[in-house]
Image: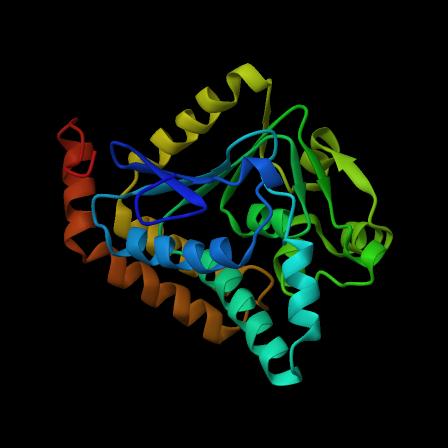
Length: 262
């Protein structure tokens, strides 16, 4: 248990912050405490300039089994306004993680179910062990994966989302990779090495360039290629190439040395 957090553990490895969901006895189901602590921790990591990459993983036998159903039942019995307010708070967290300005890597082992799949799909890169399993089981208990649906459908595509959101079927890590949800598979013993390799690749990049690139990707993916979009992309590169970071990056390349951020 991390000081100040009941359900999370923060581990620093240089410029890489590892955030561990730490309710192993409940397969890291997101209870009220975790749902409050995750946004607080990510806000702190966003402000910490020494953190360049964030890895999200789970302690115990699971990545995350989704929302705590006891909590979901309690929310459903609350007044309409309070019920909606709780849902909106969670929905805003998923969006904030999707828009987090630093690279995020999901380290997935064991089950990634329901809201756990939401956490997977808002991360930039997903590395899964070969034994990981995925599922959107909400309809099987009379619910809908509403808050995570924008990110799930972007990650796996519309046709696959229709099948797995509606049926609640489980699917394997290999199937998740074929769908595009997972970027890389690794044997369980090699999972951490694969995550570290990707984290180090991010550390070789300019931190401001990464933040700009993440924002640009959200703006251009799926957008029609209009004169307005072309003008916007020209403005982005014009702004970036006049920055101190770009000057340092270009100089380091020409001088055959590492840039100061590396």
